[in-house]
Image (cartoon, rainbow, N blue to C red; front, side, top):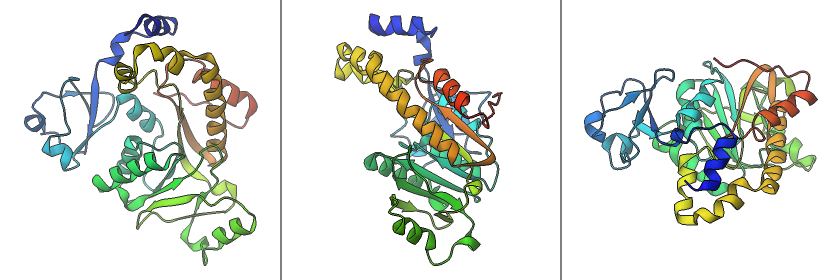
Amino acid sequence: LPDAFLEFLNENGIDPSIYTPRYIRLKPGLEAIEADIKCKLEKVEWLPNFYSLPPHIQIASSKSYQEGKIYGIDAASGAAVSALNISPGDHVLDLCAAPGAKLCMVLELLGNSGSVTGVDVAKHRLAACRTLVQKYKLGDHCRLFVADGASFSLIPIRYKEWTSRRPWKERKRANKEIPELIYYGRCSGVVGMSKIELGYDKVLVDAECTHDGSIKHIQKFENWGWSTMERRVLDAERTDDLTVLQFRLLTNGFKLLRVGGNLVYSTCSLTHAQNEDVVERFLSLNPCAELLVID
């Protein structure tokens, strides 16, 4: 890693060794795959169905990966989903869903119940989510919308409240934007306008950030050139723009949360500015929100 980035890690109290491990998640009951991927898996004790493996192991060519029995997802991403405390029947909103690993984990935890609404502003990235949920056969309770997460406003309503697509007509009359629906699972219920207290049970805001905590992102600088890292990751002006977006995403996610529901805010940045500072500002302006301790 270049000196500028090592200095950045040191200023934020981060040990560079965190960039070493890779992780996979196995579908429950499918632990016996070591012969297929030709390496020994190390169980992540604090995160069910997660395993670490050496960084040089390629899983894409394995039968287990091709059959949808395993998928790559960071333990940190799994921790964000785990913190939602998902229960059967929950209606969950993933406000920045692409590329989709966390979305798949949420759908696995829900099983044959509830629904997941995935939102992302980039259509091509959301299409990757669609590919994942289809590959892993998790799409029945999922719907995907191309929309700006900072302004998305569709909330789940019960089927009995849905009559002749009326919510869509109400939005059209009010000249409100109707987001593009690019995937609709056959058991994913309906989405429309309703009373705001009937919002989502759980909301995940995994916000856009500088990605300085992601090994995959940092490795891209081998191709981009390490000299571009300061502009792409450490530039204060770009970070200021991102924190504004992060605050807007968090604020909108909270608006769509039902009373008594849980929201998790996360990033793959290691800086206080994009994490603790954003949450602190949000709490100062939203006294009805309560900060919960994560085990």
